[in-house]
Every structure is written in structure tokens, then in C-alpha cells.
Image (cartoon, rainbow, N blue to C red; front, side, top):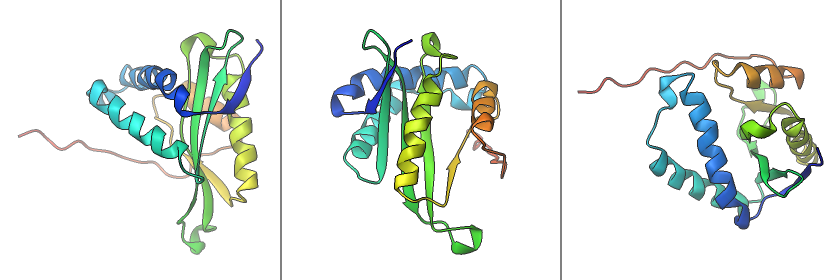
Length: 162
């Protein structure tokens, strides 16, 4: 499949948002924690992507399929906040990566991450971090193939409703 990876522009936001909802819905099917008010969250995610697109500390890339359709996207950042005693001050963080169901297992995630990893190298990061839902076995396996390993387990408990 011919695939094109490029930096996103504000013109891509309208295509990114439905894929982001697909991404969250995929997770909600596996864990009720991700079941949220999508219209409200989508508005906030749009603002987040707009801000990321306007920052040199963020990278937003999109993958386009052979017909120009959005096949996936990735949002990443380069930050300076890890204490030196934990291995360095400057690290990369993959915020989100999503690939449409129709384009999964076709190398889209690999191509997106390849561009992001090159950007991290240019940013001279000490290491790269990301979060993966424990119930998302496809994503966990992908990241392990990229050389990532488990470091911590993030636990969560919802506040009980009164």
C-alpha cells in the first residue's frame, strides 16, 4: 500500500478527530474507564492538537493512504522535566498513536513511529516514554517490537459517585 507520512497541519484536524474517537472507542470496548462524553472530549482534543501544531516542542504527523485518506496519526513531544537521577533531563513522549481499523497491520504504525523516532533523535532525547492501555494487546505487542519494555504499572481508581 503506498503510504505518505507528513507533518500535520490545521487542515488535518477534521480528519484526526474522528480517528481519535475511533481510538478511544476501541479502548472503551476493552475497559469501561475509557467510556466518556465523546463530544466534550473531542472538543478538548481538538484544542490540544491545535496547540501542539503551534508548538516547536510537539510533533503531529499523519499517514495518508493511496487515496489521500487518513490512515493514522501520531502526536509526540520532547520535554525537559525528568530528574537527572532517573536517567536524564530530556526525553521524548509519544502522547497518542492511532491507526484506522481499515489500515491496521499494514505498516502504518511502523511508518509513523519511524518519523517520530527520527524527530526524537534530532531533539537529542535521552529516552522515549509512552503509555499503553493494559487491555490493548495489539498496541502493547507493537511497542515491544519497537524495543520498549514495561517500566512501571500505572494504577487508577475512579472516585465513587455520591
